[in-house]
Image (cartoon, rainbow, N blue to C red):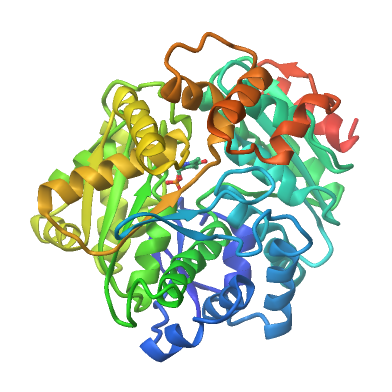
Length: 500
Ligand SMILES: *Cc1c(COP(=O)(O)O)cnc(C)c1O
Protein backbone atom coordinates (compact mmCIF):
# COMPACT_ATOMS: atom_id res chain seq x y z
CA UNK A 1 0.00 0.00 0.00
CA UNK A 2 1.36 3.38 -1.01
CA UNK A 3 0.34 6.95 -0.31
CA UNK A 4 0.16 9.94 -2.59
CA UNK A 5 -0.52 13.67 -2.20
CA UNK A 6 -3.81 15.41 -2.94
CA UNK A 7 -1.82 18.02 -4.88
CA UNK A 8 0.77 15.80 -6.58
CA UNK A 9 -0.44 12.45 -7.80
CA UNK A 10 3.03 11.51 -9.09
CA UNK A 11 4.20 11.13 -5.50
CA UNK A 12 4.34 7.60 -4.12
CA UNK A 13 5.51 7.02 -0.55
CA UNK A 14 5.10 4.49 2.26
CA UNK A 15 2.89 4.94 5.30
CA UNK A 16 6.00 5.46 7.46
CA UNK A 17 7.04 8.37 5.24
CA UNK A 18 3.52 9.83 5.21
CA UNK A 19 3.38 9.78 9.01
CA UNK A 20 6.84 11.29 9.58
CA UNK A 21 6.37 14.02 6.96
CA UNK A 22 2.82 14.92 8.13
CA UNK A 23 2.12 17.22 5.18
CA UNK A 24 3.43 17.04 1.61
CA UNK A 25 5.98 19.62 0.49
CA UNK A 26 3.69 21.22 -2.10
CA UNK A 27 1.02 21.69 0.58
CA UNK A 28 -1.12 18.64 -0.22
CA UNK A 29 -2.31 16.00 2.24
CA UNK A 30 -1.29 12.35 2.10
CA UNK A 31 -3.94 9.82 1.09
CA UNK A 32 -3.78 6.08 0.42
CA UNK A 33 -3.45 5.31 -3.31
CA UNK A 34 -6.24 2.78 -3.02
CA UNK A 35 -8.73 1.99 -0.27
CA UNK A 36 -8.48 -1.59 1.05
CA UNK A 37 -11.78 -3.46 0.72
CA UNK A 38 -13.13 -5.70 3.48
CA UNK A 39 -15.80 -8.38 3.18
CA UNK A 40 -18.88 -8.97 5.30
CA UNK A 41 -17.11 -12.05 6.70
CA UNK A 42 -14.15 -9.92 7.77
CA UNK A 43 -16.46 -7.52 9.63
CA UNK A 44 -18.45 -10.31 11.20
CA UNK A 45 -15.24 -12.05 12.30
CA UNK A 46 -14.46 -9.02 14.50
CA UNK A 47 -17.79 -9.25 16.32
CA UNK A 48 -16.36 -10.93 19.39
CA UNK A 49 -12.96 -9.24 19.23
CA UNK A 50 -11.78 -6.66 21.75
CA UNK A 51 -11.31 -3.08 20.59
CA UNK A 52 -7.56 -3.62 20.41
CA UNK A 53 -7.92 -6.70 18.22
CA UNK A 54 -10.21 -4.80 15.87
CA UNK A 55 -7.69 -1.94 15.74
CA UNK A 56 -4.84 -4.29 14.83
CA UNK A 57 -6.82 -5.87 11.99
CA UNK A 58 -8.02 -2.60 10.45
CA UNK A 59 -4.74 -0.75 10.78
CA UNK A 60 -2.75 -3.62 9.28
CA UNK A 61 -4.62 -3.06 6.01
CA UNK A 62 -3.11 0.43 5.76
CA UNK A 63 0.30 -0.05 7.36
CA UNK A 64 1.69 -2.70 5.02
CA UNK A 65 5.29 -1.51 5.58
CA UNK A 66 5.01 -2.55 9.25
CA UNK A 67 5.02 -6.06 10.68
CA UNK A 68 2.09 -7.50 12.65
CA UNK A 69 4.28 -7.26 15.78
CA UNK A 70 4.99 -3.59 15.22
CA UNK A 71 1.31 -2.80 14.72
CA UNK A 72 0.39 -4.85 17.76
CA UNK A 73 2.91 -2.87 19.84
CA UNK A 74 1.43 0.46 18.66
CA UNK A 75 -2.09 -0.63 19.60
CA UNK A 76 -1.09 -2.12 22.96
CA UNK A 77 0.96 0.99 23.73
CA UNK A 78 -2.01 3.23 22.97
CA UNK A 79 -4.96 1.50 24.59
CA UNK A 80 -3.54 -0.64 27.45
CA UNK A 81 -2.41 0.09 30.97
CA UNK A 82 -5.57 1.69 32.31
CA UNK A 83 -5.24 4.83 30.21
CA UNK A 84 -8.86 4.45 29.12
CA UNK A 85 -11.47 4.37 31.84
CA UNK A 86 -13.64 1.91 29.91
CA UNK A 87 -12.31 -1.53 28.92
CA UNK A 88 -14.40 -1.26 25.81
CA UNK A 89 -12.30 1.83 24.87
CA UNK A 90 -15.11 3.24 22.69
CA UNK A 91 -18.44 1.90 23.99
CA UNK A 92 -21.73 2.22 22.12
CA UNK A 93 -24.67 3.11 24.37
CA UNK A 94 -28.30 3.20 23.35
CA UNK A 95 -29.98 6.58 23.80
CA UNK A 96 -33.46 5.51 22.71
CA UNK A 97 -35.01 3.32 20.00
CA UNK A 98 -32.45 3.04 17.21
CA UNK A 99 -30.39 6.08 18.23
CA UNK A 100 -26.99 5.13 19.64
CA UNK A 101 -24.10 7.11 21.07
CA UNK A 102 -20.48 6.14 20.36
CA UNK A 103 -18.58 7.44 23.39
CA UNK A 104 -15.12 8.47 22.27
CA UNK A 105 -14.03 10.29 25.42
CA UNK A 106 -12.92 7.62 27.89
CA UNK A 107 -9.23 8.41 27.31
CA UNK A 108 -6.84 10.38 29.52
CA UNK A 109 -7.95 13.87 28.42
CA UNK A 110 -11.70 13.16 28.12
CA UNK A 111 -12.07 14.14 24.43
CA UNK A 112 -12.09 12.01 21.30
CA UNK A 113 -8.65 13.24 20.22
CA UNK A 114 -7.16 10.71 22.64
CA UNK A 115 -8.31 7.91 20.33
CA UNK A 116 -5.70 9.01 17.79
CA UNK A 117 -3.20 10.91 19.92
CA UNK A 118 -2.57 7.98 22.25
CA UNK A 119 -1.54 5.94 19.22
CA UNK A 120 0.25 8.55 17.10
CA UNK A 121 3.44 8.74 19.23
CA UNK A 122 4.01 4.98 18.86
CA UNK A 123 3.31 5.09 15.14
CA UNK A 124 5.50 8.15 14.70
CA UNK A 125 8.45 6.62 16.55
CA UNK A 126 8.03 3.39 14.58
CA UNK A 127 7.89 5.37 11.35
CA UNK A 128 10.85 7.59 12.13
CA UNK A 129 12.98 4.53 12.89
CA UNK A 130 12.44 3.53 9.27
CA UNK A 131 12.84 6.97 7.73
CA UNK A 132 14.90 9.27 9.95
CA UNK A 133 17.21 6.87 11.78
CA UNK A 134 18.18 8.22 15.18
CA UNK A 135 17.07 11.83 15.12
CA UNK A 136 15.21 13.31 18.05
CA UNK A 137 11.70 14.47 17.14
CA UNK A 138 10.37 17.84 18.30
CA UNK A 139 6.59 18.09 18.14
CA UNK A 140 5.17 21.59 17.93
CA UNK A 141 1.46 22.12 18.45
CA UNK A 142 -0.78 25.17 18.21
CA UNK A 143 -4.02 24.40 19.99
CA UNK A 144 -7.41 25.89 20.66
CA UNK A 145 -7.75 23.54 23.64
CA UNK A 146 -8.32 19.82 23.17
CA UNK A 147 -5.52 18.90 20.75
CA UNK A 148 -2.79 20.42 22.93
CA UNK A 149 -3.65 18.43 26.03
CA UNK A 150 -4.26 15.20 24.12
CA UNK A 151 -0.90 15.55 22.35
CA UNK A 152 0.93 16.33 25.62
CA UNK A 153 -0.59 13.28 27.24
CA UNK A 154 0.21 11.10 24.21
CA UNK A 155 3.87 12.16 23.94
CA UNK A 156 4.53 12.48 27.69
CA UNK A 157 7.84 10.71 28.44
CA UNK A 158 7.98 9.02 25.02
CA UNK A 159 11.69 8.38 24.25
CA UNK A 160 13.41 10.48 21.55
CA UNK A 161 10.63 13.05 21.50
CA UNK A 162 10.03 16.51 22.92
CA UNK A 163 6.71 18.29 22.71
CA UNK A 164 5.95 21.99 22.96
CA UNK A 165 2.40 23.38 22.91
CA UNK A 166 1.39 27.00 22.25
CA UNK A 167 -2.10 28.09 23.22
CA UNK A 168 -3.91 31.44 22.98
CA UNK A 169 -3.84 33.01 26.46
CA UNK A 170 -7.48 34.09 26.39
CA UNK A 171 -8.79 31.50 23.96
CA UNK A 172 -9.13 28.27 25.96
CA UNK A 173 -11.53 27.21 28.71
CA UNK A 174 -10.32 27.33 32.35
CA UNK A 175 -10.43 23.52 32.49
CA UNK A 176 -8.42 23.18 29.28
CA UNK A 177 -5.82 25.68 30.55
CA UNK A 178 -5.51 23.84 33.85
CA UNK A 179 -5.17 20.52 32.02
CA UNK A 180 -2.23 21.82 30.00
CA UNK A 181 -0.44 23.86 32.67
CA UNK A 182 -0.34 20.94 35.12
CA UNK A 183 1.00 18.45 32.52
CA UNK A 184 3.59 16.05 33.88
CA UNK A 185 6.57 14.63 32.00
CA UNK A 186 10.23 15.51 31.42
CA UNK A 187 9.92 16.10 27.69
CA UNK A 188 7.00 18.53 27.64
CA UNK A 189 6.62 22.29 27.44
CA UNK A 190 3.59 24.60 27.38
CA UNK A 191 3.50 28.30 26.60
CA UNK A 192 0.63 30.79 26.28
CA UNK A 193 0.85 33.42 23.60
CA UNK A 194 -0.61 36.91 23.63
CA UNK A 195 -2.83 36.37 20.63
CA UNK A 196 -5.65 34.21 19.34
CA UNK A 197 -5.59 30.68 17.94
CA UNK A 198 -4.81 31.90 14.42
CA UNK A 199 -1.75 33.76 15.76
CA UNK A 200 -0.54 30.60 17.52
CA UNK A 201 -1.11 28.56 14.36
CA UNK A 202 0.62 31.10 12.11
CA UNK A 203 3.56 31.32 14.52
CA UNK A 204 4.01 27.56 14.65
CA UNK A 205 3.83 27.32 10.87
CA UNK A 206 6.54 29.95 10.44
CA UNK A 207 8.76 28.20 12.98
CA UNK A 208 8.46 24.99 10.96
CA UNK A 209 10.00 26.77 7.97
CA UNK A 210 12.33 29.18 9.83
CA UNK A 211 15.82 28.98 8.28
CA UNK A 212 17.70 29.87 11.47
CA UNK A 213 15.96 27.08 13.38
CA UNK A 214 16.55 24.66 10.52
CA UNK A 215 20.34 25.15 10.78
CA UNK A 216 20.35 24.74 14.55
CA UNK A 217 18.21 21.63 14.29
CA UNK A 218 20.48 19.97 11.77
CA UNK A 219 23.51 20.63 13.96
CA UNK A 220 21.73 19.11 16.99
CA UNK A 221 20.28 16.06 15.23
CA UNK A 222 16.73 17.31 15.78
CA UNK A 223 13.76 17.28 13.43
CA UNK A 224 10.32 18.86 13.61
CA UNK A 225 7.13 16.91 13.29
CA UNK A 226 3.49 17.75 13.67
CA UNK A 227 0.69 16.10 15.60
CA UNK A 228 -2.16 18.05 14.07
CA UNK A 229 -5.16 16.50 12.46
CA UNK A 230 -3.92 16.52 8.88
CA UNK A 231 -1.34 13.82 9.73
CA UNK A 232 -2.44 10.45 8.31
CA UNK A 233 -1.45 8.96 11.67
CA UNK A 234 -4.27 10.94 13.27
CA UNK A 235 -6.89 9.80 10.78
CA UNK A 236 -6.14 6.08 10.64
CA UNK A 237 -6.92 5.22 14.30
CA UNK A 238 -10.27 6.96 13.85
CA UNK A 239 -11.39 4.58 11.10
CA UNK A 240 -11.24 1.75 13.62
CA UNK A 241 -14.01 2.94 15.94
CA UNK A 242 -16.65 3.05 13.22
CA UNK A 243 -16.03 -0.64 12.51
CA UNK A 244 -15.95 -1.28 16.22
CA UNK A 245 -19.31 0.46 16.71
CA UNK A 246 -20.85 -1.65 13.94
CA UNK A 247 -19.49 -4.85 15.50
CA UNK A 248 -20.83 -3.83 18.92
CA UNK A 249 -24.26 -3.22 17.42
CA UNK A 250 -24.12 -6.66 15.80
CA UNK A 251 -23.20 -8.13 19.15
CA UNK A 252 -25.98 -6.26 20.93
CA UNK A 253 -28.42 -7.61 18.35
CA UNK A 254 -29.38 -4.12 17.19
CA UNK A 255 -28.54 -4.92 13.57
CA UNK A 256 -27.82 -7.94 11.39
CA UNK A 257 -24.68 -8.26 9.26
CA UNK A 258 -25.20 -6.18 6.14
CA UNK A 259 -27.78 -3.81 7.64
CA UNK A 260 -26.90 -0.22 6.92
CA UNK A 261 -26.40 2.39 9.61
CA UNK A 262 -26.31 6.20 9.56
CA UNK A 263 -23.37 7.97 11.18
CA UNK A 264 -23.61 11.50 12.63
CA UNK A 265 -20.44 13.41 13.44
CA UNK A 266 -20.11 16.85 15.06
CA UNK A 267 -17.47 18.35 12.83
CA UNK A 268 -14.76 21.02 12.80
CA UNK A 269 -11.74 20.13 10.71
CA UNK A 270 -13.68 17.35 8.91
CA UNK A 271 -11.28 14.69 10.23
CA UNK A 272 -13.60 12.55 12.31
CA UNK A 273 -16.34 12.34 9.67
CA UNK A 274 -13.79 11.67 6.94
CA UNK A 275 -12.62 8.63 8.90
CA UNK A 276 -16.23 7.37 8.76
CA UNK A 277 -16.16 7.94 5.01
CA UNK A 278 -13.03 5.77 4.71
CA UNK A 279 -14.76 3.03 6.73
CA UNK A 280 -17.73 3.22 4.37
CA UNK A 281 -15.50 3.01 1.29
CA UNK A 282 -13.78 -0.04 2.74
CA UNK A 283 -17.13 -1.80 2.91
CA UNK A 284 -18.76 -0.87 6.21
CA UNK A 285 -22.52 -0.87 5.50
CA UNK A 286 -23.38 2.82 5.79
CA UNK A 287 -26.48 4.53 4.46
CA UNK A 288 -25.67 8.19 5.09
CA UNK A 289 -23.02 10.31 6.76
CA UNK A 290 -24.52 13.29 8.56
CA UNK A 291 -22.25 16.27 9.13
CA UNK A 292 -23.21 18.42 12.14
CA UNK A 293 -21.91 21.97 12.66
CA UNK A 294 -22.45 24.73 15.21
CA UNK A 295 -23.08 28.37 14.17
CA UNK A 296 -19.86 28.20 12.15
CA UNK A 297 -21.77 26.34 9.46
CA UNK A 298 -19.38 26.58 6.53
CA UNK A 299 -19.58 22.79 6.00
CA UNK A 300 -23.39 22.68 6.15
CA UNK A 301 -23.51 25.21 3.33
CA UNK A 302 -20.84 23.37 1.36
CA UNK A 303 -22.59 20.02 1.54
CA UNK A 304 -25.93 21.56 0.65
CA UNK A 305 -24.76 23.84 -2.18
CA UNK A 306 -21.29 22.75 -3.34
CA UNK A 307 -20.00 26.22 -2.48
CA UNK A 308 -17.28 26.51 0.17
CA UNK A 309 -17.02 30.08 1.43
CA UNK A 310 -15.05 31.09 4.51
CA UNK A 311 -15.86 34.79 4.02
CA UNK A 312 -18.35 34.95 6.82
CA UNK A 313 -18.61 36.00 10.42
CA UNK A 314 -16.68 33.85 12.89
CA UNK A 315 -18.66 32.89 15.99
CA UNK A 316 -17.21 31.92 19.37
CA UNK A 317 -19.57 29.20 20.54
CA UNK A 318 -20.07 26.86 23.49
CA UNK A 319 -18.74 24.03 21.29
CA UNK A 320 -15.33 25.71 20.76
CA UNK A 321 -13.55 22.69 19.24
CA UNK A 322 -15.73 23.14 16.16
CA UNK A 323 -15.19 26.90 15.81
CA UNK A 324 -13.37 26.52 12.53
CA UNK A 325 -13.81 28.10 9.12
CA UNK A 326 -11.08 26.23 7.25
CA UNK A 327 -11.75 22.50 7.48
CA UNK A 328 -8.36 21.15 6.42
CA UNK A 329 -9.33 17.52 5.99
CA UNK A 330 -12.02 18.38 3.45
CA UNK A 331 -9.22 18.43 0.88
CA UNK A 332 -8.98 14.63 1.12
CA UNK A 333 -12.69 14.28 0.32
CA UNK A 334 -12.38 16.69 -2.62
CA UNK A 335 -9.46 14.66 -4.02
CA UNK A 336 -11.49 11.47 -3.84
CA UNK A 337 -14.64 13.07 -5.31
CA UNK A 338 -12.54 14.29 -8.25
CA UNK A 339 -11.22 10.72 -8.55
CA UNK A 340 -7.62 11.69 -7.89
CA UNK A 341 -7.50 14.67 -10.25
CA UNK A 342 -4.72 16.58 -8.45
CA UNK A 343 -4.95 19.46 -10.92
CA UNK A 344 -8.60 20.06 -9.96
CA UNK A 345 -7.62 20.06 -6.26
CA UNK A 346 -4.78 22.52 -6.89
CA UNK A 347 -7.15 24.89 -8.66
CA UNK A 348 -9.83 24.74 -5.97
CA UNK A 349 -7.30 25.33 -3.20
CA UNK A 350 -5.64 28.14 -5.11
CA UNK A 351 -9.04 29.76 -5.27
CA UNK A 352 -9.58 29.16 -1.54
CA UNK A 353 -6.26 30.83 -0.79
CA UNK A 354 -6.85 33.81 -3.07
CA UNK A 355 -10.57 34.43 -2.61
CA UNK A 356 -11.57 32.39 0.45
CA UNK A 357 -14.04 30.35 -1.60
CA UNK A 358 -14.45 27.63 -4.20
CA UNK A 359 -17.28 25.76 -5.85
CA UNK A 360 -17.29 22.12 -6.96
CA UNK A 361 -18.81 20.87 -10.21
CA UNK A 362 -22.41 19.74 -10.53
CA UNK A 363 -21.37 16.07 -10.87
CA UNK A 364 -19.29 16.31 -7.70
CA UNK A 365 -22.16 17.94 -5.81
CA UNK A 366 -24.38 15.03 -6.85
CA UNK A 367 -21.81 12.59 -5.48
CA UNK A 368 -21.70 14.50 -2.18
CA UNK A 369 -25.49 14.42 -2.10
CA UNK A 370 -25.58 10.65 -2.53
CA UNK A 371 -23.64 10.10 0.72
CA UNK A 372 -23.77 13.20 2.91
CA UNK A 373 -26.48 15.14 4.69
CA UNK A 374 -25.65 18.20 6.77
CA UNK A 375 -27.19 20.43 9.38
CA UNK A 376 -26.24 22.97 12.02
CA UNK A 377 -27.52 24.47 15.25
CA UNK A 378 -26.79 27.51 17.41
CA UNK A 379 -25.87 27.70 21.11
CA UNK A 380 -29.48 28.05 22.29
CA UNK A 381 -30.50 24.86 20.46
CA UNK A 382 -27.37 23.11 21.76
CA UNK A 383 -28.29 23.92 25.37
CA UNK A 384 -31.94 23.01 24.85
CA UNK A 385 -30.78 19.63 23.49
CA UNK A 386 -28.53 18.94 26.50
CA UNK A 387 -31.50 19.66 28.79
CA UNK A 388 -33.98 17.62 26.78
CA UNK A 389 -31.69 14.60 26.43
CA UNK A 390 -30.90 14.72 30.13
CA UNK A 391 -34.55 15.03 31.16
CA UNK A 392 -35.97 12.49 28.70
CA UNK A 393 -33.27 9.83 28.69
CA UNK A 394 -31.22 10.60 31.81
CA UNK A 395 -28.12 10.96 29.60
CA UNK A 396 -25.70 13.83 30.12
CA UNK A 397 -23.87 14.93 26.97
CA UNK A 398 -21.36 17.65 26.22
CA UNK A 399 -21.95 20.63 23.93
CA UNK A 400 -20.29 19.11 20.82
CA UNK A 401 -22.23 15.87 21.14
CA UNK A 402 -25.43 17.88 21.61
CA UNK A 403 -24.87 19.53 18.23
CA UNK A 404 -24.70 16.03 16.71
CA UNK A 405 -27.84 14.86 18.52
CA UNK A 406 -29.82 17.94 17.49
CA UNK A 407 -28.79 17.71 13.83
CA UNK A 408 -29.60 13.99 13.91
CA UNK A 409 -33.13 14.50 15.22
CA UNK A 410 -33.74 17.34 12.73
CA UNK A 411 -32.60 15.00 9.94
CA UNK A 412 -34.84 12.15 11.11
CA UNK A 413 -37.85 14.43 11.46
CA UNK A 414 -37.31 15.93 8.03
CA UNK A 415 -36.60 12.74 6.08
CA UNK A 416 -38.43 10.07 8.08
CA UNK A 417 -35.23 8.00 7.70
CA UNK A 418 -35.29 5.49 10.58
CA UNK A 419 -32.05 3.69 9.79
CA UNK A 420 -30.22 2.75 13.02
CA UNK A 421 -27.89 5.63 13.77
CA UNK A 422 -24.60 6.12 15.58
CA UNK A 423 -23.79 9.60 16.87
CA UNK A 424 -20.12 10.27 17.63
CA UNK A 425 -19.84 11.69 21.15
CA UNK A 426 -16.61 13.67 21.18
CA UNK A 427 -16.12 14.93 24.74
CA UNK A 428 -17.06 14.28 28.34
CA UNK A 429 -19.71 16.74 29.58
CA UNK A 430 -17.32 17.58 32.41
CA UNK A 431 -14.90 19.16 30.00
CA UNK A 432 -17.43 21.93 29.41
CA UNK A 433 -18.99 22.19 32.89
CA UNK A 434 -20.14 25.80 32.72
CA UNK A 435 -22.17 25.37 29.52
CA UNK A 436 -23.53 21.95 30.45
CA UNK A 437 -24.57 22.99 33.96
CA UNK A 438 -26.22 26.17 32.72
CA UNK A 439 -28.15 24.01 30.21
CA UNK A 440 -29.54 21.68 32.88
CA UNK A 441 -29.81 24.38 35.62
CA UNK A 442 -30.36 27.73 33.89
CA UNK A 443 -30.58 29.56 37.25
CA UNK A 444 -26.97 28.60 38.15
CA UNK A 445 -24.64 31.53 38.94
CA UNK A 446 -21.41 29.75 39.96
CA UNK A 447 -18.28 30.58 37.93
CA UNK A 448 -15.44 28.65 39.62
CA UNK A 449 -14.65 25.68 37.38
CA UNK A 450 -14.25 23.10 40.13
CA UNK A 451 -17.30 24.25 42.07
CA UNK A 452 -19.21 23.95 38.80
CA UNK A 453 -17.95 20.41 38.41
CA UNK A 454 -19.12 19.42 41.89
CA UNK A 455 -22.49 21.07 41.31
CA UNK A 456 -22.95 19.23 38.04
CA UNK A 457 -22.20 15.94 39.80
CA UNK A 458 -24.66 16.74 42.57
CA UNK A 459 -27.36 17.81 40.18
CA UNK A 460 -27.08 14.83 37.81
CA UNK A 461 -25.60 12.01 39.86
CA UNK A 462 -23.15 11.38 36.99
CA UNK A 463 -19.61 11.28 38.35
CA UNK A 464 -16.92 13.37 36.74
CA UNK A 465 -13.80 11.67 35.31
CA UNK A 466 -11.12 11.37 38.00
CA UNK A 467 -8.50 13.01 35.81
CA UNK A 468 -10.58 16.22 35.60
CA UNK A 469 -11.52 16.22 39.29
CA UNK A 470 -7.90 15.66 40.25
CA UNK A 471 -6.70 18.76 38.39
CA UNK A 472 -7.81 20.93 41.28
CA UNK A 473 -4.97 19.73 43.47
CA UNK A 474 -2.26 19.45 40.84
CA UNK A 475 0.63 21.86 40.83
CA UNK A 476 0.83 24.29 37.94
CA UNK A 477 4.13 23.73 36.12
CA UNK A 478 3.83 26.12 33.21
CA UNK A 479 2.88 29.78 33.38
CA UNK A 480 5.02 31.36 30.68
CA UNK A 481 3.40 33.82 28.27
CA UNK A 482 5.17 35.02 25.13
CA UNK A 483 4.45 37.52 22.38
CA UNK A 484 3.10 36.25 19.08
CA UNK A 485 6.06 37.25 16.85
CA UNK A 486 8.37 34.57 15.49
CA UNK A 487 11.43 35.85 17.40
CA UNK A 488 9.68 35.44 20.74
CA UNK A 489 8.31 32.03 19.86
CA UNK A 490 11.67 30.84 18.50
CA UNK A 491 13.27 31.78 21.83
CA UNK A 492 10.69 29.68 23.68
CA UNK A 493 11.54 26.71 21.45
CA UNK A 494 15.29 27.11 22.01
CA UNK A 495 14.84 27.57 25.78
CA UNK A 496 12.83 24.41 26.03
CA UNK A 497 15.40 22.42 24.05
CA UNK A 498 18.24 23.91 26.10
CA UNK A 499 19.82 25.50 23.01
CA UNK A 500 21.65 28.80 23.55
C1 LIG B 1 -11.64 18.34 17.68
C2 LIG B 1 -13.03 18.17 18.18
C3 LIG B 1 -14.13 18.08 17.30
C4 LIG B 1 -13.99 18.23 15.80
O1 LIG B 1 -13.35 17.15 15.22
P1 LIG B 1 -12.84 17.23 13.70
O2 LIG B 1 -12.10 15.99 13.44
O3 LIG B 1 -11.99 18.47 13.64
O4 LIG B 1 -14.06 17.36 12.86
C5 LIG B 1 -15.39 17.86 17.85
N1 LIG B 1 -15.58 17.76 19.19
C6 LIG B 1 -14.55 17.84 20.07
C7 LIG B 1 -14.82 17.74 21.54
C8 LIG B 1 -13.24 18.04 19.61
O5 LIG B 1 -12.22 18.13 20.49
